[in-house]
Length: 72
Image 1 (tube, rainbow, N blue to C red):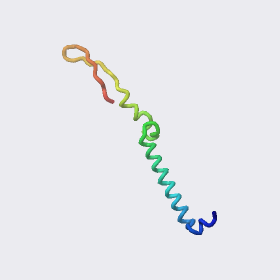
Image 2: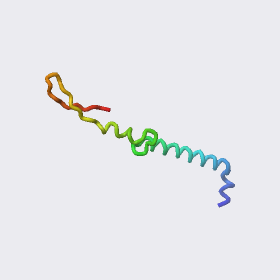
Image 3: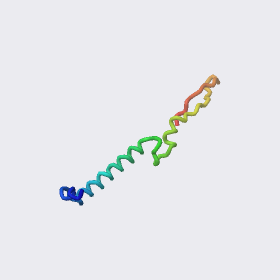
Image 4: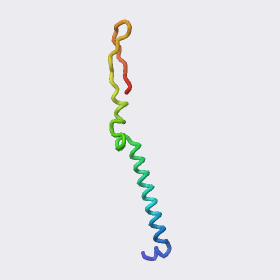
């Protein structure tokens, strides 16, 4: 096992490993931020807003009630 370090420079190998792991960590965090469940910046409320549409009654000019969807 020790002979592998005669082929590869240990400093360059460790730097390359750390750069790769850092890039992988950043990629995983951005993937998690793009999901609704694991977005810790905007929170769970951001994904619930379009689903929570209220129905309100609005009277038109003749006095009849109609239902309209309110978009939040």
